[in-house]
Length: 348
Ligand SMILES: NC(=O)c1ccc[n+]([C@@H]2O[C@H](COP(=O)([O-])OP(=O)(O)OC[C@H]3O[C@@H](n4cnc5c(N)ncnc54)[C@H](O)[C@@H]3O)[C@@H](O)[C@H]2O)c1
Image: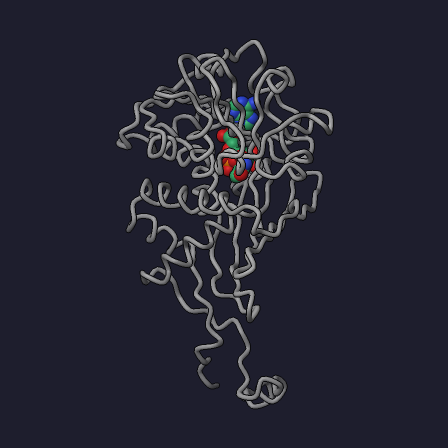
């Protein structure tokens, strides 16, 4: 059988190569770079195709496709969310994604995105915190110590200068895992035995739990004025983390309102509940944090443009490093109309 031509090949970043790439660059540097890429794309938000992600729900989880395009490149991510998975030895969230050239429609990158999603989610959280968290933030609470938690903590260290992370998970084994992984990171890690203890003295409260229900990880009376809440885990219909009272007295910042109203914490609120779009804070059209008493809330659900930024970042990294392999992914007959002939000639 003949060798595939150049045109047949698409760079593929496996999990193994993604891990090499991250170690080669340094995890905090990747988070800093990704924050820059996401911020660049939020600044040019209006150039993108935007649609709420296409979700297929079941009793146990969700499978989603997240597409967008800036007119030159097109990207999508496949991602699942299955909170029951960890008990079966599987991850809650796995993902892969693709970037394509709009002019030819040809894919230019296929990559694992499970690790990349954790990185981009953390980078997006840190970018939001840059505009919304109190000045001189040095302590964060990290509630939910699963797969995303170390990434979230390190992004707040790298971008916000957080020095102390206070951990809580309903499963102490998850907290022990997170604390062990963060040892040597330069963060002071405090393991706590209740959410109340975890949020003591913290200016950023990150909730990143996985449970398919209207949960109350933070209740109204727990949260004092002036903090920034980074709510990551409420990202599906019927899956939230905050009490309504917190939403009522916070200024709520979102990615893409038509998606967040379906999936975010604000699904608990009326359709006309006031929110500010984060991209407008970044361009300066809207104000972020106004004063020290204001409670800000980033109601994060994860939007396709963040994945597009992450794909763009990996495409640039692939061009300058060897952390990929070439996949024979696109049929490339000598005569473009002779696809069948190519198949026939390949018969052994
Ligand atoms: N907003 C986004 O862009 C985005 C991106 C990725 C993941 N997520 C969401 O973030 C959440 C966490 O993802 P993950 O991959 O870390 O999941 P995970 O299953 O690895 O970890 C979740 C952790 O939450 C803990 N938990 C569950 N209920 C709790 C409670 N009531 N109090 C304290 N801890 C509790 C679990 O014990 C577990 O350790 C998921 O809900 C996922 O859908 C959001």
